[in-house]
Image 1 (tube, rainbow, N blue to C red):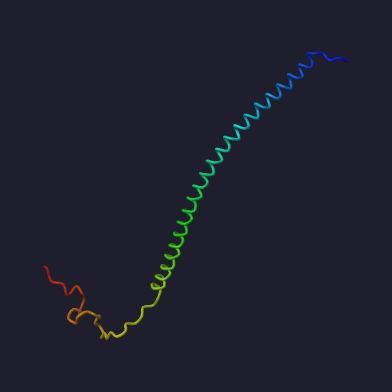
Image 2 (image 1 turned 120 degrees about the horizontal axis):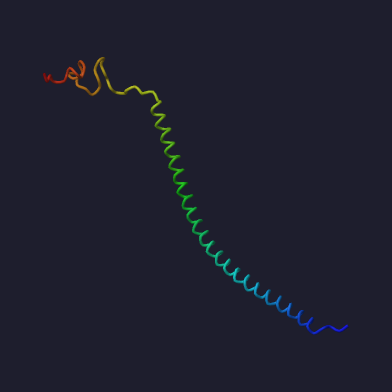
Length: 119
């Protein structure tokens, strides 16, 4: 059985077309890979920048937490001072009716009595 010459040419033509199509697709994939490599590089740069910002925010958050802890401790100390019973005065001799640090002439009566009369 003898093959026809056009049949061999068709087969060769199909193979050449498939080779050209595969080459074209390979070039397209290579260009796509190059563009994806560029995108990857820019995304890595952005990731590094965002990681730097994230570490700065974490450091700031740690400072805020430390400040809140300190403020809470001071608030607890102040609450303890407010809730504590007043201590008796030491070393101050106060006679009945006399206020410490006020001369006896001013201590008698109410403070309104010591105001000048403006009528």
